Image 1: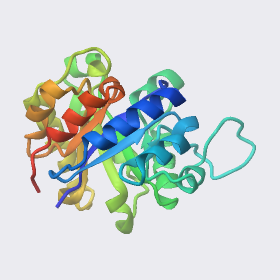
Image 2: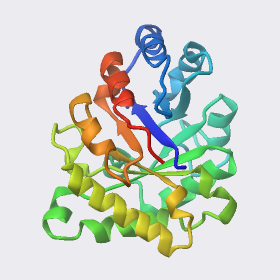
Image 3: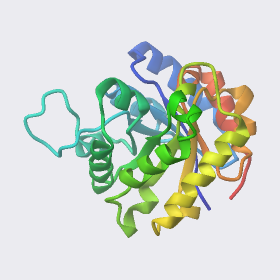
Length: 252
């Protein structure tokens, strides 16, 4: 059975006041949650400790980025080991904003995935195409190449720590979203790539990210290869985030 995951990426938003208000509301809104979804909150790194304190161990927590290095003279960076030691379970790796705004390369993504897995974190590997790439008919080729490079250092015992989030760049924060059918087609393609690499593809959770909201979550989550969502702006609204988590049907 694949894990069903709904992860809220707060991006560079938040405050201690937001943590105090939002996390408790999410926690109470999810209890009881009987569809098997694992909810994850991924706040700015400075608020990780506060979020963990508020979750009471009932909601997983992650970081939005990790360094390519284990330690050293890299001012401003946070290592995977530090994230794990602080109580995190997950790390995003290769989010499109990291790629576009900070020039993160496929090679760096591969290194960060290796660091995350070696430290015991689950890596949520983000892949996706731009609008130009999709319109040029290159979407599957682009995403396939990103997946192949990102998992190139994963060994057999680490696949259970791998989660892949497909986030079409043109649908992030724009209000646009891929149709459920288009999203399913890309998820199926990603699963086929994983299978071709010898990975246990049917056991790896694939998430959709790209303007997921309560009103489109159910249609997306009903697709056979979509196992959850990577949620942006909607994760800053407790009622919306809880509704998205509850939109997941029980399925294997």
